[in-house]
Image 1 (spheres, rainbow, N blue to C red):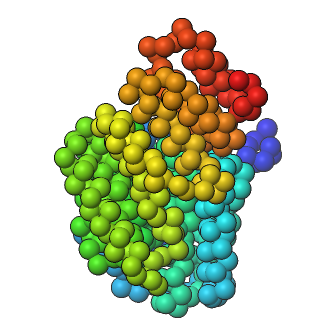
Image 2 (image 1 turned 45 degrees about the vertical axis):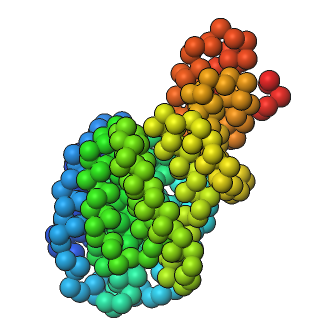
Length: 383
């Protein structure tokens, strides 16, 4: 019996490097993205290849040095218009909010991968003008970044890496430097949280240097990511400087209207404060972390994952201050929230938190917390 006879004729081996390239020519970039997105639903990228921070280097350098593609017009399949772009943008917005509430591994976010494969990728091979082409590339970059973030959140790091690289190339094709910088900041966070701090700093340095004329809210987020990387690398002075720049840029952004891309609307003072909690926790400054937490007032329903992770960080800051009585309620709140979120990243924060309670592992309340995290339980009634 042949592969075709059992419906597996299309299951040819996949090149481990597919999706990692940042082609110089636009035609090659469209072909690379299409090849990757048409095969990314296969489990090959989940199990057979490894994440390598070094693979981010060439795309980052090429994004930084390569000029915007001269012409975006294309002649091929059906004609693409602005209504098609609107469809992609609306799906991205819906999925972005679903990701924040339910996690990157939730069913609602999986629609992004399907859209890239079945809708956006065929559009890239259609017929469109130069202006529409640039809008198409930008919309596709937004979707690709979101798919990368969802994979990163779900713990599928090799595939996330490829999503980010393809999104970065599409942002370059669109001539959208701000969007490219945002994609790079996500790449930097992925590298940072996997302990590749120097690689993360290379990417965020490229992003901040290239986006000098981008909207201040975008730049504020880039410097916030830089502060997070420095904090993870235990560089308090550099982290403090980057956080201060981010604050100043955000204040400038709040005094302006009309120039913020939709995809950066989440970055408010409350979001900066939430990340500042983790920055100071990582620097071993629990009092500062808890002070910042007073300003981190993002809606818990809309930003469930972020809220749950922040509660885990707040609990760990109380642990640093040796305040078990305050640490436990925050920890249980985190379990309550994150138990309803489909996110491996959230799970990693909970596992890290349990490890920080090790000095009190024999305490009944700590054993209960450990059991709740171990079972993945969410209902607070288990307490």
